[in-house]
Length: 139
Image (tube, rainbow, N blue to C red; front, side, top):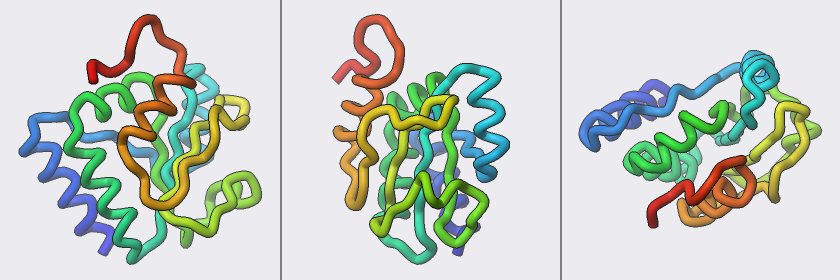
């Protein structure tokens, strides 16, 4: 199942002309990169077999502007609930998908986005919480 999601994401990105997001699958490694770079982590927590999770990843992959911003301004981390190599106590949720924007010090930047995630909500979170000059998104 997991490989199907990755194939779909890759195909969607290729067809849209956008570079795919290079997701980290290991939270600890992503945290080290975040601390070295000073960039916050965008953690997307999904559950196997979760249709809204797959839908979110497909919509994300097809939005070139959002993909570029996430890739440039954050350390993107994709973890599954079943893979407990992330701080479960910090990133606790019962709704999937859930997005967390974390500083390199592992503090929350904005409120987590839980459940059916609309890309406009993700854009607003990134616009409000990421350091930048001007607008991040042209929309």
